[in-house]
Every structure is written in structure tokens, then in C-alpha cells.
Length: 230
Length: 237
Image (cartoon, rainbow over all chains, first blue to last red; front, side):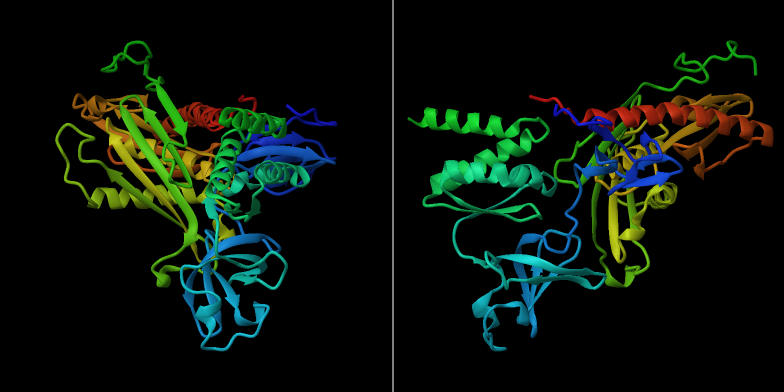
């Protein structure tokens, strides 16, 4: 287990459970302050840093947030844009104006047709729905490669601290990988073997997501895998 | 009510519950799931959502909706029961919704629905209590924000004796005043979210029954807590 600088240890909490008591602590995501006590509001992993206590979700559906890059599938085409399913509670909408080139009203299906997959960024979340854009670098239609689905709560482990894990996978496999925050991952490699190797290592990470020193473990995994293939 | 003189059919003490078992993550395709059992009564609950509410006219833009579905499988009892919804299962579904809702914080999910499917795979009385316990576990496992856990137990009155966690033999008690079944659901702080009663009982005895339930739900809470915490091993290699 990681050594914490100070304060409490990481632990699994259940709803209604007291995490820490003390006036100096502040309630973060998934917690509530009750007098001087910080109480969990959901099941997850409680963590404390700089007196801010939060509960990291271990399960549940994806909660969309502004700025998240997600991978979705075109469900429907309307006059003004595309309805895209991103595996969240609500469907998302990609309006015509958020496409980086001119599209005529008749040409919508040429840009994105029903069933196409797309990498997009969330620019708005409100009661009416989720708004998307593809007007940025790296946001585009998926034409080739492999898309896999993992538990969206494991996405931070796949990316790693400052992208350490994802860069390690990219370096070792030579594949281009786009991780959607909603748990969909797009893998684009030179050949299908490389892509399947990435799929395998990502499944390995999601299974072992709780251990510390996971990056070293994955490095070891790649060594074994390459040794075994020779 | 002299203790020690009363004999329960299976030899348990009057305040003793049947052995309980709980486990989360039993349905891999659900967003959250759990199994809970009291002796031979086994319930499985699966939670899906929050997701879009269908049909659209049922959407509530002010807050999210909890939708429970209690179902007893045809092989759960010795005389096969007709599968599908019945008067009894519709009632228990509604009761389950009401007993869980006070603890849920689904205000944050307007126009959405959280679906809970409860299946009784083996029945030996107290099925609604086992169902509620499983559902509370499954909701927590699905990461739904909650103020606390919910635990449920049935208190019985056999003739003049109060007992905790009634089984099928006791439910059919015929001596003296007969059997009265009182399912009670409580939050972890001991607040009642659900109480049902059909039969005869006086006010004093009802107060005692609630006190017994308060003690029993504490025990159930510990079992639920252990199940949720035990499902993740932080030091797994």
C-alpha cells in the first residue's frame, strides 16, 4: 500500500459510514459534513489529501462531466446534428456547428452515419441532455482499429498518474490508444495482433486495479509476454 | 414472557436469527447486485441505472424515481407458484420502494430511474425482508448516493411470545393466539422506514417488537457492511 503523507489510510467505505472526525477536514465528492464528522454518501474508496476527503467510486454507471473525452456511437440523425449514445444515463447530442467543416443539411450522413463510432468531447451537461463537440485535435470519427469496453470506474487506472500507464502501453505495443472517460477505449495499431495485445493488457489492469505499483507489474507483464512469444 | 420456557420449532432462542449470508457482485451484467439470505430464504437483487425513464410520461423532472420489482420464482416454494406478477408481488414491490426511498439521494437524477429487480430463489418466510436487505446492498454496490444502509427483519408473535426472524413453520403457528408477522425495516440509525402488521398485538408488545427489531437490524447491518467491504481486497496480488 502507498504510504500516505499524513492523516488517514485509504479504506473502503459504505454509505452512511463515518470516514474521519475532526474540524480540519473538508468534505469532497461523495461525502457530507455532519457536525465535525465526514460521512460517506456512497460505496467506494475513501481518500484524503490536504484535508480534503473524497470517496472514489468503484462501481456504477458513468457520470458525464464537462471536458471529458468520450467515445460514442451514432444512434440517430436529426436536422441539426447527431444523437450519440455514450453509455451514460442520458443520450448526448452533437450539433452541426460543432463539426470543424461546413456540412450541408443533406450531407449529415456522409460525415457521421448511424452506427459510426466517434471520439468527442463533452462541452455541456444540463437537465436537457449532454452536448458534444468534435472541434478539437484528436476528436474524430473512428474508421479503423478496435473499440473495447471496460468498467468506466477503472479508467483512471488505465491512464495512470499523469498518463504513465497509458504511455507505457503505447510504448510497448506501438499502438495509438484513445481512452474515453465513459469506459470505451479505441486501439489503433499496425496489425490486429498488436491491438489484441493491448486489449489483453487492459483487461489485466482492470482485474488488478487495486494493487499499488501496478505500473511495474504491467512492465513485468510485457516482458513476460514478449519473452513468451519468441 | 419468561425466557427459556418457550420452544421454537427449530430450537433457536427467541432473539436468535437464522444464519445470515450476504454477498455483492453476484450478477456481473448489472450495475450493482447482491445476494442476501436468512437460513433457507435466499434473495438476489440486481440494480440497473440511473438511466432514462421509459415510458416518457412517467418521468419526474423534479427528482429521480426508484422502481422495484419483487418476484418469487416458481420453484422457490414446495408447491410450484404461478410465475409472473401477482397481487402479492405488486404490493411487496411497492412496499420495498417505500422502505428504501428515505435513504436514497436520487434527487440528483431528475427524469431518470433506478431499477431494482429482486428475485426470491428460495423461500422460507421473511422473503420481503431478505429482498429489502439484498436491494439495499445492491443499491450501495451500484454506487447510488445514500444517507445510510437499510436493514429489514420480521418479528413474529407466536401465541404470546415475541420472536425474531420468523420462518415458515412458525408462520403457520396455530396454538393459542396464533401467529402474527411484523416485518420492520430500519435505517442504520434505528429509524423506521417500513412496518407492516396483520394479526393481533397490543401496544406494549408492539413497542417491544420494535426494540427487538432495532437490535436485530444492527446485526444485519454488520453483515451487510462486511459483505460490501469484503468484496474489494486492497492488497490483492
